Amino acid sequence: MNYDVILLAGFGGPRQLADVVPFLRNVTAGKAIPDARLEQVGAHYRLFDGHSPINEQTEALRDALAAALLAEGIKLPVVIGNRNWHPFTIDALRPDGTGEFPTIQAAIAAACARSPIPVVAGCLP
Image (cartoon, rainbow, N blue to C red; front, side, top):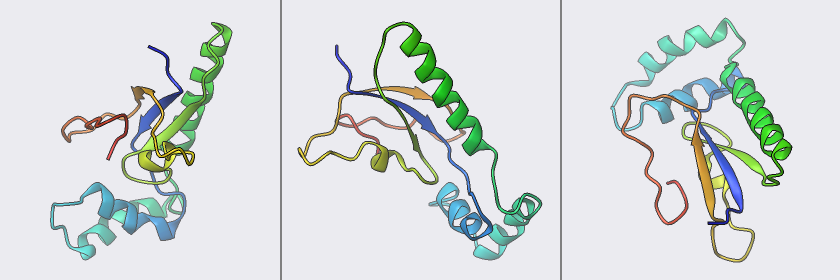
């Protein structure tokens, strides 16, 4: 099978203080956790100015994967699509105006207690 893109599916994380509670809302979606509790948990991010190192770690993994593939003669873009924060998976795979999603090969870069991320018609919800 020929692929158009390799998706590195990640968890995502906040990049600044203003992102922390909205990020935590995404992580805890469907669990009815009050914002007051999210603020308490979010306090841990204040130690790092709201910044999670998972973003740079995922970007470094993407760069290393792209370089390793290129060394093997595989010239495919490697994009990051996160479940919980920007860039979200659906945005990473947004159609280019054709109305169709690309054919992807996915690599999961995030361990999570949730059920596996479903792949439906070549895109992740």
